[in-house]
Image (cartoon, rainbow, N blue to C red; front, side, top):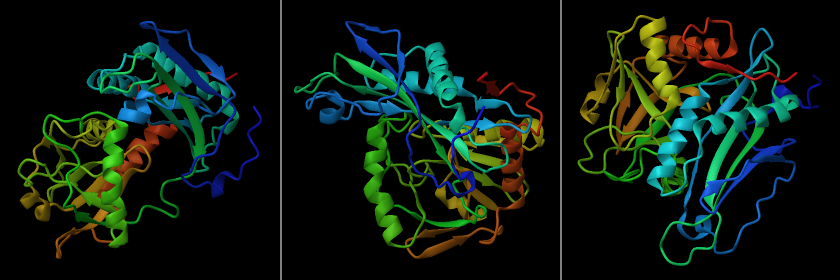
Length: 343
């Protein structure tokens, strides 16, 4: 298949439209059969539920070209499951998990020319999302919804390698106990925008949010889970009912145990413990792991022994192993790669 005329090596992490996207509408209590369309515009009522009361959720995953030329996605069934949880919490109709995966497959097939070649460092980012489309003026769920999937080719999140970043402990709260922090709701990200702009203005790359109830436990950043490495090589990830269950974080924990033979703990992490860890990283789809070199807590610095020059050794091994599985040069012994036949 002939690829699109794109300079893959110069791609940034930004949107550009591709050939087709998937659309399915929910009306009269049921989803229609869905369709691909070349139209990249969304037309809805000025009073649509998504515009009035932020009734929307989304997912994010990638399609890769493996070393042997296959086009694959990574554990898409987990994205489907997580969107089910998000929809239920927001009183939206569930889009069936098997149809979610099939919709992603259709979009990747239709845009195969935009799946970057192996070794380019680029990928096809895929964004499934759902929103209330019918008019809502009283505070209540919409009656009609639209599920869509679009894709866009993106470059590596970090050009020239992932250098450790400096983050700050935020004075803002990301999510309340019993709130919506555990789902991928658009409103969660809207609420984080002021905090991240403030952090950037102060010279920091990201925020560390603490739990809203006691402000003593580590939660996550605006868009990624934390991963810590102890001085004896144990992997520790924070546990909380208001943390989004990152698919990347869950996968890294399995990689640590099953591929690298490391001990793993998923538990509450007190902020007072952070100074004693050897390495710190942020886990997410975009970068897989973003290394953290320093955390600033109102003027007090926590500097990790791994330093500010490169990923710590354990974090680097985790990163290389997971990306190796995704790119097909490390055996996918757990069946995580979902192949999409585009011939």
